[in-house]
Image: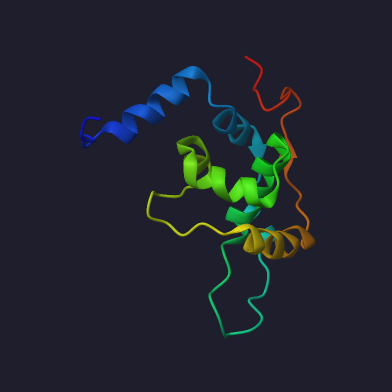
Length: 129
């Protein structure tokens, strides 16, 4: 195996975009100018680890729904797939919620609801061209 180059990740992500990254196309069709405010929830207890960003948790729910994934499989695939990391705005060294954290945080993120509107031309995660 050859040593990773400085631009290898960027080149791989560009290649994924060229092949038609479904998550990238999906998020371009979401009209949520106030997504962060809509999904905001109170932190609650000041002890323990800080909660994950509600927008991150919402995006994880999108991934789970589009791919019909369990919490365990979702946590694994977020760590494994560059396309998932890009969609979630995560770097290789960023903290990723485990399966228990996904279940707990997802309930909080969804409890607030969302007023996001999807483009009507979207079908199975692909934007109509």
